[in-house]
Length: 422
Image (cartoon, rainbow, N blue to C red; front, side, top):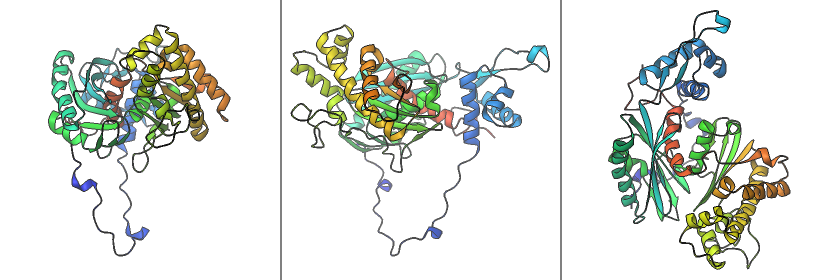
C-alpha cells in the first residue's frame, strides 16, 4: 500500500492549555494575481477571439491589468493573437483579439475507477486528444499508480503531436484530499491514505493534481459545459460509486476535511424486503440502490445474463424491455435524491452524471417527473435538472479536468514546462 507521509497523521500531544484566538496567527492571504489572472484566461476561453478591452469589461479589471496578464499568457504560449479587426464602424485603433492557443500544450488526466483506469490527453480548450482505458489486473495502489505512470509516455508519444504536457490530473471516487494529494478513503478499491500525488509526481516528473471525480466534473462544467453552473450547481455522479459536488460563485465547495459530497447513504429506496442491503446496515441507501453493481445484480435476478454494467447499458440502448425498466427505476430513485439536493442547496441547476439520463430520453423524463413530484423549491425541472455536458466521455474528462482546472485557476503559477513570469 502507498502509505501517507507520517506528518499527515496528528500524533502530537495536546497543548497543556487551549490556544486563544489571539495566539493563532491569521492565515496568509492568497496572492491577488491568481484570481485576476484566472479571470482573464477564463474570459478568453469563454469569448475568444476577444479584444483585450472586452476582457477588461467582462472581468471588471483595468485595461492595464488585462494587458499585463495577456502579455504573460502570450509569453507562456497559453494564448495567441488572432487576425486584427477594426474598431466599431471602422473607427479607433484596430483590435488584435486573443484566443486560447491549443497548438503548444496539453494536460494529461487519469481516472481511477473500481474495475479499470482511464488515461486521457486534453488541449487547453477542453477537447480530448486521446483516451485509453484498461481494466485493472489488481487493486494494489502501488501497482495501479505505477501502471498509469508507465502508460502515459506511450500515450503522449502517439498522440501529443509535438505538444508539451503541462501537468497530470488524477480523479477518483469517494474521499479525496486535494490539498494533500491523497486518496483518503476508497472502500470499493480498499484504498486508504494513498499518497497519489507524491507517487505519480516522482514517477512522471509532472505537476500532479488530485481530486474527486464529482468535484472535477463540476469544475469541468464551470469551465466548458453548462453555463448555469457558474452561479451555483450540484453535480450528482452515479456510477460504481455515488457522490456529489456543490459549486457556487465559480468555486467548488470541499469542506474543512475535503469530505463534502458524500451522498451515498441518502435514503431513497423502497422498504424491506425490496430494498438492496447496504454496507451501513440500513436498506434503501442511494448507492446500494442505484450503483452499477446493484443494477447488475438486479438484472441477474430478472434473468438478464450480463457480464458487467456496460453490457446492461448496451441492452437498454438496444431497447431490451427489462434493461430499460431497470434504468427507468434507477432514474426514479435518482430523481428522489435530486429532489432532496435541490431542497437542501437550492442551486441554479443540478447536473446528473448518469448514462440513463444522458442517453435514454425516457429516463431523463422519469427523473424530472420525480423531482417535480417531490421537490418543494423546484418549479421547473426541465431547466433545473440537466444531464452531464460530457455524456460518453465522463471519465476521461474527469481526470484531465483536474489539471485543466488547476491551470485556469493559476495560469501564472509554477508550471515547470512554461517560461517563468516576472
